Length: 204
Image (cartoon, rainbow, N blue to C red; front, side):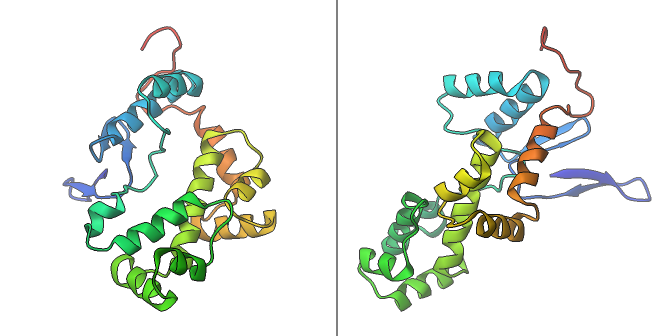
C-alpha cells in the first residue's frame, strides 16, 4: 500500500499486493508473517544483512522475503480441500524444481489424464500447468539471487533451466530484469536506507 496526494491536497491510497511498502515515513505490511519480513528488511538496511539473517535463524524463519514479493496464500486455503489432485500436482512441481516433470508425468503421478490436469489448472488457477511450473521455478530463482551468493548460472540449473541463456531470457520476460540485474539491484539496495532512518551500527 502506497500513499500520495491529489492536486487538491486530498490523501490518496494506492493498494498493492506486495508483502510490505515503505513510503517515506509510512510503513505498512499485509499482516501475519509479513511484519517479520518488514522487520528483517529494516534491520538489514539499518545494520547489515548478516545480522538480519542471524535474527531470522533465531526465529526459525525459513527465508527472508523482499517487500516486492507477492502475497501468497497456501493453495489448499485458496481452493479448499475439494481438489486434491490439483494440490498434489502443485506439490509435485514444488518438490521437483531442479528436474521439472512433464505435464504427462504429472498427470500420471496424480492419476488423471493430461487434459483433466489442464482443465483443473485453468478452472482454479486461471493458467496452464507449464506456465505455473515456470513461475514456481522463477520465483525460487529470485529467492536464491536475493539471498545467496551462488552464481546465476548455478541458480538457473538448480531451478531447472538447461542453459544460462534460457534462464536469463525467461527471467527477464517474467520480472523485467535479467538475473544479473536482479542481483546488482539487491546489492545496491542493501546500502540504501529508507527515508527518515539513519544508518547506525551502534544504536537501533
